[in-house]
Image (tube, rainbow, N blue to C red):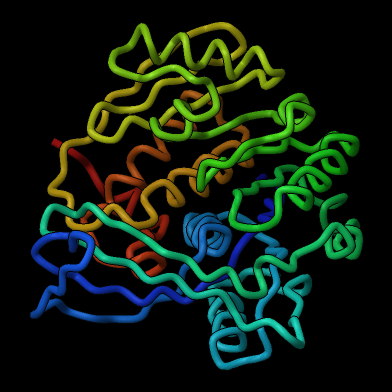
Length: 305
């Protein structure tokens, strides 16, 4: 039996240009391909979890505009509970401008819009759904005060609070002790720990420092080098799957959503990492954010060589 996953986070519309290389300052690149895609780290993670079989409630804020209403309808179509997505009467919905090069690397600029207005009061209004959930997943594209408030509330209710600290921002020390797990990439782990990650020894040091702040389970995604896990003092390395990367957008979000689904299904942390690794590997072979997120049927029928 799967438990409910509550995702608290951002909702954006991504405007994407795929080009041969990322522009340098002052450079104009001609000939790229353009498309729009639903995005935002919170929304990506909510949709990823829903497509992979999770029972998901999404707490977010959008503008009173076409982007906001369209996003809500899309989440409904994914089977996500949208009761606690509120509409801001003044700010527009969030927008992200994304450039992707020929190797799948990207650079992103985000106009937060209504995401920046998600407040502790909005969390209070969703207290009942948090009470009904088992896992609360958050990121950092909404105000840190709201993230911290929600973590304190959910932890006090005995929920597993999982933080994906992206984009990397200074975090209050009091936040860590309310986390069940933190899921970072290399850049975020370096930012939080102050340790430059160059090898497995430095990953261990970074995880020790992060864990020392009060969080028992530290997961560091290392791209093609796999995933490092520190689980209550034990260290593990899970290898990556070899795939041809097309676009890394939302790979980390897929990983986070998949982790929550597996944990909600009572899988162990290592089993969850293996499942999430497989799901993220599929995501990087496709263009876009939510358009690249796999469904459970695809994962179950997939095998890597």
